[in-house]
Image (cartoon, rainbow, N blue to C red; front, side, top):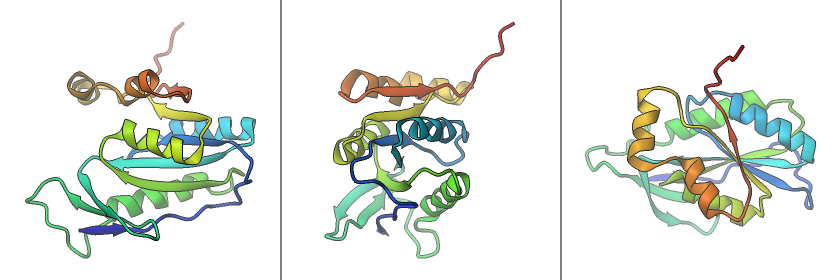
Length: 174
């Protein structure tokens, strides 16, 4: 089992300022976060960047907010040096990308299905907007969409909060 402590705020979040929830992924194009930052500046909002790790399952939440998870694959045993590597790498990437942008932000690690995690965090934070990227280009993105549908589509059809979809593969038109 792996324990993931809550991540701190970077910058000072104003108590009455709106919150934007943005879905993030390891190796995701920085376009999604950049667009979310632009929106946050315009709205004078803070960002909550959420990654739902699909390879892990929820076990418990400790009183201090620490998330206890286990791998879905029983053949993947947690090891001390391997636990939390993807979470740490994504948190560090966000810190580098969001350094000096002038928007308060924090990272929330979750597990399971992305649209449910984004909806939960949006509810918990009172978010006024959820920002997600469009499906990744190529055959892999198409297969994910075919099998499980898109996160953006599920959110758009089930949430009372507006959903903004940032295009990731924009074709140039003359």
